[in-house]
Length: 303
Ligand SMILES: NC(=O)c1ccc[n+]([C@@H]2O[C@H](COP(=O)([O-])OP(=O)(O)OC[C@H]3O[C@@H](n4cnc5c(N)ncnc54)[C@H](O)[C@@H]3O)[C@@H](O)[C@H]2O)c1
Image (cartoon, rainbow, N blue to C red; front, side, top):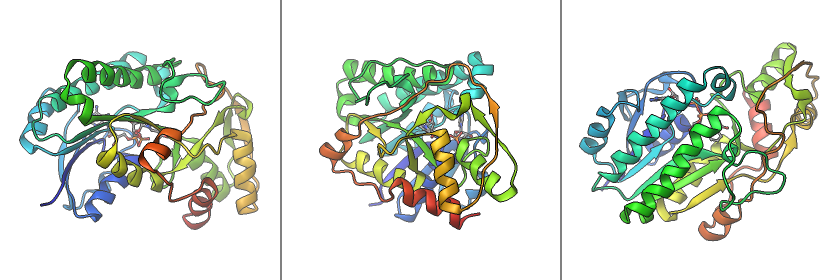
Protein backbone atom coordinates (compact mmCIF):
# COMPACT_ATOMS: atom_id res chain seq x y z
CA UNK A 1 0.00 0.00 0.00
CA UNK A 2 1.22 3.49 -0.89
CA UNK A 3 2.00 5.76 2.04
CA UNK A 4 -0.01 8.99 2.03
CA UNK A 5 1.38 12.35 3.12
CA UNK A 6 -0.21 15.81 3.27
CA UNK A 7 2.13 18.81 3.19
CA UNK A 8 1.07 22.40 3.85
CA UNK A 9 3.35 24.95 2.20
CA UNK A 10 4.42 22.17 -0.18
CA UNK A 11 5.01 24.64 -3.03
CA UNK A 12 7.44 26.78 -0.98
CA UNK A 13 11.23 26.93 -1.20
CA UNK A 14 12.07 24.09 1.21
CA UNK A 15 8.96 21.98 1.00
CA UNK A 16 8.73 21.97 -2.81
CA UNK A 17 11.87 19.81 -2.56
CA UNK A 18 10.17 17.66 0.09
CA UNK A 19 7.04 17.32 -2.08
CA UNK A 20 9.17 16.18 -5.03
CA UNK A 21 11.16 13.81 -2.81
CA UNK A 22 8.09 11.92 -1.62
CA UNK A 23 6.53 11.90 -5.12
CA UNK A 24 9.80 10.38 -6.42
CA UNK A 25 9.61 7.75 -3.66
CA UNK A 26 6.16 6.73 -4.90
CA UNK A 27 4.18 8.16 -1.98
CA UNK A 28 0.66 9.49 -2.44
CA UNK A 29 1.26 13.24 -1.89
CA UNK A 30 -1.34 15.94 -1.15
CA UNK A 31 -0.28 19.60 -1.01
CA UNK A 32 -2.16 22.55 0.50
CA UNK A 33 -0.73 25.96 -0.37
CA UNK A 34 -2.17 29.40 -1.13
CA UNK A 35 0.52 30.31 -3.70
CA UNK A 36 1.63 33.36 -1.73
CA UNK A 37 5.21 34.66 -1.29
CA UNK A 38 7.87 31.98 -1.74
CA UNK A 39 5.64 29.55 -3.64
CA UNK A 40 6.64 27.72 -6.82
CA UNK A 41 3.42 26.74 -8.59
CA UNK A 42 5.54 25.71 -11.58
CA UNK A 43 6.17 22.38 -9.82
CA UNK A 44 2.47 21.48 -10.10
CA UNK A 45 2.59 18.72 -12.74
CA UNK A 46 -0.19 16.31 -11.79
CA UNK A 47 2.17 14.02 -9.83
CA UNK A 48 0.54 15.11 -6.55
CA UNK A 49 -2.92 16.24 -5.50
CA UNK A 50 -3.14 19.97 -4.95
CA UNK A 51 -5.54 22.22 -3.00
CA UNK A 52 -5.07 25.94 -3.42
CA UNK A 53 -6.27 27.05 0.03
CA UNK A 54 -5.28 29.29 2.90
CA UNK A 55 -4.34 27.05 5.81
CA UNK A 56 -6.11 29.44 8.20
CA UNK A 57 -9.51 28.41 6.79
CA UNK A 58 -11.47 25.91 8.89
CA UNK A 59 -12.36 24.15 5.62
CA UNK A 60 -8.76 22.87 5.61
CA UNK A 61 -9.75 20.59 8.51
CA UNK A 62 -12.43 19.00 6.27
CA UNK A 63 -9.85 18.49 3.50
CA UNK A 64 -7.39 16.82 5.89
CA UNK A 65 -10.12 14.52 7.25
CA UNK A 66 -11.41 13.71 3.74
CA UNK A 67 -7.91 12.93 2.41
CA UNK A 68 -7.11 10.89 5.55
CA UNK A 69 -3.30 10.87 5.20
CA UNK A 70 -1.14 8.86 7.59
CA UNK A 71 1.53 11.58 7.61
CA UNK A 72 1.10 15.36 7.85
CA UNK A 73 3.71 18.11 7.66
CA UNK A 74 2.72 21.67 8.52
CA UNK A 75 5.23 24.05 6.91
CA UNK A 76 2.96 26.77 5.44
CA UNK A 77 3.84 30.11 6.99
CA UNK A 78 4.75 33.69 6.27
CA UNK A 79 8.49 33.07 6.52
CA UNK A 80 10.04 36.49 5.95
CA UNK A 81 11.44 38.16 9.10
CA UNK A 82 11.69 41.62 7.50
CA UNK A 83 8.05 41.43 6.36
CA UNK A 84 6.99 40.29 9.83
CA UNK A 85 8.63 43.40 11.33
CA UNK A 86 6.65 45.61 8.93
CA UNK A 87 3.41 43.61 9.30
CA UNK A 88 3.45 41.96 12.76
CA UNK A 89 -0.34 41.76 13.07
CA UNK A 90 -0.84 39.90 9.81
CA UNK A 91 2.17 37.62 10.36
CA UNK A 92 1.15 36.63 13.89
CA UNK A 93 -2.50 36.18 12.99
CA UNK A 94 -1.90 34.12 9.88
CA UNK A 95 0.87 31.88 11.19
CA UNK A 96 -0.88 31.30 14.50
CA UNK A 97 -4.24 30.57 12.88
CA UNK A 98 -2.59 28.17 10.44
CA UNK A 99 -1.02 26.37 13.40
CA UNK A 100 -4.37 26.15 15.23
CA UNK A 101 -6.12 24.71 12.17
CA UNK A 102 -3.43 22.10 11.55
CA UNK A 103 -3.15 21.00 15.20
CA UNK A 104 -6.93 20.67 15.30
CA UNK A 105 -7.02 18.75 12.00
CA UNK A 106 -4.39 16.32 13.32
CA UNK A 107 -6.16 15.91 16.66
CA UNK A 108 -9.27 14.78 14.77
CA UNK A 109 -7.52 12.58 12.20
CA UNK A 110 -7.98 8.84 12.96
CA UNK A 111 -5.50 7.71 10.26
CA UNK A 112 -2.65 9.84 11.68
CA UNK A 113 0.70 8.11 12.24
CA UNK A 114 2.89 11.22 12.42
CA UNK A 115 2.42 15.00 12.32
CA UNK A 116 5.49 17.22 12.01
CA UNK A 117 5.25 20.88 12.93
CA UNK A 118 8.03 22.77 11.13
CA UNK A 119 9.65 25.37 13.37
CA UNK A 120 12.95 27.24 13.35
CA UNK A 121 16.13 27.96 15.32
CA UNK A 122 14.82 31.52 15.67
CA UNK A 123 12.42 30.44 18.45
CA UNK A 124 15.44 30.27 20.79
CA UNK A 125 16.27 33.94 20.28
CA UNK A 126 19.86 34.97 20.98
CA UNK A 127 22.05 31.82 21.25
CA UNK A 128 25.07 32.74 23.36
CA UNK A 129 25.71 28.99 23.73
CA UNK A 130 24.62 25.92 21.68
CA UNK A 131 20.89 25.55 22.28
CA UNK A 132 19.40 22.09 22.68
CA UNK A 133 15.71 21.26 22.42
CA UNK A 134 15.08 21.68 26.16
CA UNK A 135 16.01 25.37 26.18
CA UNK A 136 13.46 28.08 26.95
CA UNK A 137 11.92 29.78 23.89
CA UNK A 138 12.82 33.44 23.59
CA UNK A 139 11.58 34.74 20.21
CA UNK A 140 12.77 38.24 19.43
CA UNK A 141 10.79 39.23 16.32
CA UNK A 142 7.18 38.73 15.17
CA UNK A 143 8.09 35.89 12.78
CA UNK A 144 9.90 33.86 15.46
CA UNK A 145 7.10 34.58 17.91
CA UNK A 146 4.51 33.28 15.42
CA UNK A 147 6.59 30.11 14.92
CA UNK A 148 6.98 29.64 18.68
CA UNK A 149 3.18 29.54 19.04
CA UNK A 150 3.24 26.22 17.15
CA UNK A 151 6.03 24.91 19.39
CA UNK A 152 3.88 25.71 22.43
CA UNK A 153 0.78 24.18 20.82
CA UNK A 154 2.76 20.98 20.31
CA UNK A 155 3.48 20.82 24.05
CA UNK A 156 -0.12 21.62 24.95
CA UNK A 157 -1.68 19.12 22.51
CA UNK A 158 0.82 16.41 23.52
CA UNK A 159 -0.02 16.90 27.19
CA UNK A 160 -3.79 17.19 26.74
CA UNK A 161 -4.47 14.53 24.08
CA UNK A 162 -2.39 11.43 24.94
CA UNK A 163 -2.46 9.99 21.39
CA UNK A 164 -0.61 13.09 20.19
CA UNK A 165 2.44 12.33 22.35
CA UNK A 166 3.37 9.50 19.99
CA UNK A 167 2.10 11.04 16.76
CA UNK A 168 3.53 14.57 16.90
CA UNK A 169 7.05 15.83 16.29
CA UNK A 170 8.69 19.16 15.59
CA UNK A 171 11.71 20.30 13.60
CA UNK A 172 13.81 23.39 14.22
CA UNK A 173 15.97 24.07 11.18
CA UNK A 174 18.91 26.42 11.02
CA UNK A 175 19.14 28.63 7.87
CA UNK A 176 18.29 26.52 4.84
CA UNK A 177 19.71 27.42 1.43
CA UNK A 178 19.46 26.02 -2.08
CA UNK A 179 17.53 26.24 -5.35
CA UNK A 180 14.16 28.11 -5.27
CA UNK A 181 15.01 30.19 -2.20
CA UNK A 182 13.44 33.67 -1.98
CA UNK A 183 15.80 35.96 -3.90
CA UNK A 184 15.89 38.51 -1.04
CA UNK A 185 17.66 36.08 1.32
CA UNK A 186 21.45 36.15 1.81
CA UNK A 187 22.46 33.07 -0.23
CA UNK A 188 20.48 34.00 -3.38
CA UNK A 189 21.74 37.59 -2.99
CA UNK A 190 25.32 36.30 -2.88
CA UNK A 191 24.68 34.15 -5.94
CA UNK A 192 23.08 37.01 -7.81
CA UNK A 193 25.95 39.33 -6.95
CA UNK A 194 28.48 36.75 -8.18
CA UNK A 195 26.56 36.55 -11.43
CA UNK A 196 25.76 40.24 -11.98
CA UNK A 197 28.43 42.11 -10.01
CA UNK A 198 25.68 44.07 -8.17
CA UNK A 199 26.34 45.08 -4.54
CA UNK A 200 24.22 43.42 -1.84
CA UNK A 201 22.89 44.76 1.50
CA UNK A 202 24.88 43.72 4.57
CA UNK A 203 22.66 43.72 7.69
CA UNK A 204 24.37 45.11 10.82
CA UNK A 205 27.86 44.97 9.22
CA UNK A 206 27.62 41.23 8.58
CA UNK A 207 28.22 40.29 12.22
CA UNK A 208 25.13 38.04 12.38
CA UNK A 209 26.29 34.47 13.10
CA UNK A 210 24.18 31.73 11.51
CA UNK A 211 24.33 28.01 10.81
CA UNK A 212 23.41 26.92 7.28
CA UNK A 213 22.13 23.65 5.83
CA UNK A 214 21.69 22.69 2.17
CA UNK A 215 18.05 22.09 1.22
CA UNK A 216 18.78 18.60 -0.13
CA UNK A 217 19.51 17.51 3.45
CA UNK A 218 15.97 18.30 4.59
CA UNK A 219 13.68 15.70 2.97
CA UNK A 220 15.67 12.63 4.15
CA UNK A 221 15.72 14.08 7.68
CA UNK A 222 11.96 14.61 7.53
CA UNK A 223 11.48 11.00 6.37
CA UNK A 224 13.58 9.77 9.30
CA UNK A 225 11.45 11.73 11.78
CA UNK A 226 8.23 10.48 10.14
CA UNK A 227 9.49 6.92 10.65
CA UNK A 228 11.03 7.12 14.11
CA UNK A 229 10.70 10.53 15.80
CA UNK A 230 8.14 11.86 18.26
CA UNK A 231 10.08 14.70 19.86
CA UNK A 232 11.48 18.11 18.87
CA UNK A 233 14.61 17.91 16.71
CA UNK A 234 17.09 20.67 15.94
CA UNK A 235 18.49 20.30 12.44
CA UNK A 236 21.88 21.86 11.84
CA UNK A 237 25.37 20.96 10.69
CA UNK A 238 26.94 23.17 13.40
CA UNK A 239 28.97 24.79 10.64
CA UNK A 240 28.25 28.34 11.73
CA UNK A 241 29.81 31.54 10.48
CA UNK A 242 29.13 35.25 10.32
CA UNK A 243 27.58 36.72 7.18
CA UNK A 244 30.89 38.42 6.46
CA UNK A 245 32.69 35.06 6.71
CA UNK A 246 30.00 33.49 4.51
CA UNK A 247 30.69 36.07 1.83
CA UNK A 248 34.42 35.36 2.09
CA UNK A 249 33.74 31.62 1.77
CA UNK A 250 31.61 32.18 -1.34
CA UNK A 251 34.37 34.36 -2.83
CA UNK A 252 36.90 31.57 -2.17
CA UNK A 253 34.70 28.86 -3.73
CA UNK A 254 34.05 30.88 -6.90
CA UNK A 255 37.17 33.06 -7.14
CA UNK A 256 34.94 36.15 -7.59
CA UNK A 257 34.49 39.35 -5.56
CA UNK A 258 31.18 40.28 -3.83
CA UNK A 259 30.43 43.97 -3.18
CA UNK A 260 28.19 45.02 -0.27
CA UNK A 261 26.49 48.13 1.12
CA UNK A 262 25.49 48.73 4.77
CA UNK A 263 21.94 48.02 5.98
CA UNK A 264 20.26 47.55 9.38
CA UNK A 265 17.57 45.24 10.78
CA UNK A 266 15.69 45.71 14.05
CA UNK A 267 15.01 42.69 16.27
CA UNK A 268 18.00 40.86 14.83
CA UNK A 269 19.60 38.19 16.99
CA UNK A 270 23.39 38.22 16.71
CA UNK A 271 23.84 34.49 16.94
CA UNK A 272 21.86 31.31 16.27
CA UNK A 273 23.61 28.06 17.14
CA UNK A 274 22.01 24.75 18.09
CA UNK A 275 23.01 21.26 19.09
CA UNK A 276 21.90 18.50 16.70
CA UNK A 277 22.91 15.72 19.12
CA UNK A 278 19.36 14.50 19.66
CA UNK A 279 18.54 13.72 16.03
CA UNK A 280 22.00 12.19 15.55
CA UNK A 281 22.04 9.97 18.63
CA UNK A 282 18.35 9.05 18.90
CA UNK A 283 17.46 8.73 15.21
CA UNK A 284 20.89 8.13 13.64
CA UNK A 285 20.67 11.17 11.32
CA UNK A 286 23.56 11.68 8.92
CA UNK A 287 23.46 14.63 6.51
CA UNK A 288 23.85 13.92 2.79
CA UNK A 289 25.78 17.16 2.18
CA UNK A 290 28.30 18.99 4.35
CA UNK A 291 27.99 22.78 4.35
CA UNK A 292 30.90 23.16 1.89
CA UNK A 293 29.52 20.49 -0.48
CA UNK A 294 26.12 22.20 -0.47
CA UNK A 295 27.64 25.65 -0.97
CA UNK A 296 29.79 24.47 -3.85
CA UNK A 297 26.89 22.72 -5.62
CA UNK A 298 24.61 25.73 -5.11
CA UNK A 299 27.07 28.43 -6.16
CA UNK A 300 29.03 26.71 -8.90
CA UNK A 301 26.67 24.48 -10.75
CA UNK A 302 23.46 26.43 -10.95
CA UNK A 303 24.64 29.91 -11.91
N1 LIG B 1 14.04 29.07 5.06
C1 LIG B 1 14.63 28.74 6.20
O1 LIG B 1 15.86 28.87 6.33
C2 LIG B 1 13.83 28.16 7.35
C3 LIG B 1 14.52 27.86 8.54
C4 LIG B 1 13.80 27.31 9.60
C5 LIG B 1 12.45 27.05 9.46
N2 LIG B 1 11.80 27.38 8.30
C6 LIG B 1 10.36 27.08 8.22
O2 LIG B 1 10.18 26.20 7.12
C7 LIG B 1 8.92 26.46 6.49
C8 LIG B 1 9.13 26.74 5.02
O3 LIG B 1 10.02 27.82 4.88
P1 LIG B 1 10.43 28.36 3.42
O4 LIG B 1 11.66 29.17 3.59
O5 LIG B 1 10.43 27.24 2.46
O6 LIG B 1 9.22 29.35 3.15
P2 LIG B 1 8.59 29.89 1.79
O7 LIG B 1 8.12 31.27 2.09
O8 LIG B 1 9.52 29.69 0.65
O9 LIG B 1 7.34 28.95 1.55
C9 LIG B 1 6.16 29.03 2.31
C10 LIG B 1 5.06 28.36 1.53
O10 LIG B 1 3.89 28.39 2.34
C11 LIG B 1 2.81 28.92 1.59
N3 LIG B 1 1.94 29.63 2.53
C12 LIG B 1 2.27 30.69 3.33
N4 LIG B 1 1.22 31.05 4.07
C13 LIG B 1 0.21 30.19 3.75
C14 LIG B 1 -1.12 30.05 4.19
N5 LIG B 1 -1.65 30.85 5.12
N6 LIG B 1 -1.88 29.06 3.64
C15 LIG B 1 -1.37 28.22 2.71
N7 LIG B 1 -0.11 28.31 2.26
C16 LIG B 1 0.67 29.28 2.78
C17 LIG B 1 3.44 29.86 0.56
O11 LIG B 1 2.60 30.03 -0.57
C18 LIG B 1 4.72 29.09 0.22
O12 LIG B 1 4.52 28.16 -0.81
C19 LIG B 1 8.30 27.64 7.24
O13 LIG B 1 7.41 27.12 8.19
C20 LIG B 1 9.49 28.30 7.93
O14 LIG B 1 9.09 28.95 9.10
C21 LIG B 1 12.47 27.93 7.24
